[in-house]
Length: 107
Image (tube, rainbow, N blue to C red):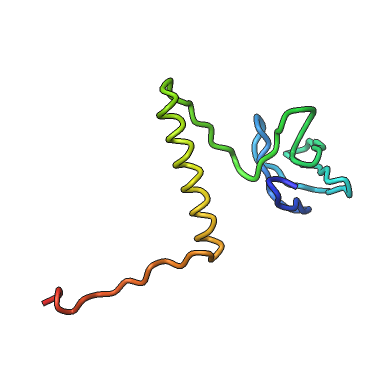
């Protein structure tokens, strides 16, 4: 699994420092093999090698934090809120507001 989502043969994943590859086998213990070019590497459940996570669904976004701790805390809070909101919208948990027009304003 990666981030709570099952990894399947044929899935495309991103390996840090290498790039995108394709999962070509998945074991019962959750480990899986990724083929990139001619090379194949096995990763443990969660995309781990040793104590380091190497595999993600896409190229992760790393943001350099500012020195100001309050600014960083606010940024993280807002980023997590926006991400959770986007997931809910895309999963159908929140419907987009209906657009209505007031004919009196159009005149």
